[in-house]
Length: 111
Image 1 (cartoon, helix red, strand yellow):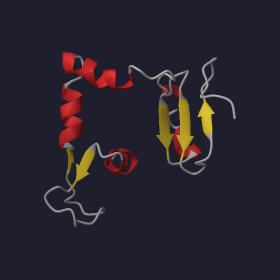
Image 2 (cartoon, one colour):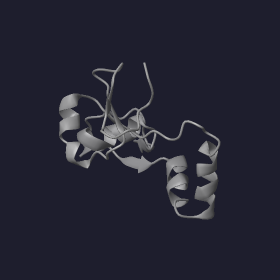
Image 3 (cartoon, rainbow, N blue to C red):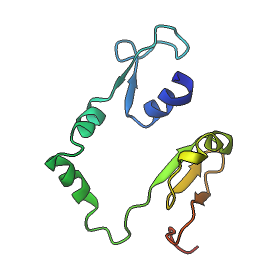
Image 4 (cartoon, rainbow, N blue to C red):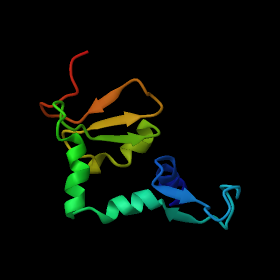
């Protein structure tokens, strides 16, 4: 669990590793993780009137929202293929200049 998921949450600043001792080695059995205060505050707003304000940030965008799932590699992506939503994009760190579009008419745009 830690290697497969939590490290990605730490990289995305959703989770804080070892807030009590940031110098603790990543392979320590004493590792602890906690949700980042800002991420927790944001999650608590889902479904409330405040959430509609966070959505307002993108309201004037003419481009529309594009959802991107990110993986370290195609091998990692393959584990989750059945869960990737149609009309979304996938980005793999091992090939950072390319996106994979999951079907449909919507696309980021021409070259």
